[in-house]
Length: 77
Image (cartoon, rainbow, N blue to C red; front, side, top):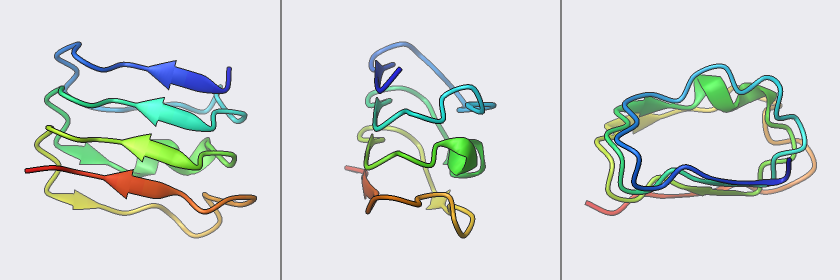
């Protein structure tokens, strides 16, 4: 899977995305996510991430998590 939209689903956390190594585009906008980053470590191909309209207070991706691309993260308050 390369594109996944989880927008508008009342999701409170992003966890264990290890089976999505080919994921390039993740849209988790308009949920209730407070933390993200660690779960995205296995998504080496991720180049687009939309976390707009969530409760994310901090965001950190481990070194090497974005090999092969330049990830972009967006958050709108």
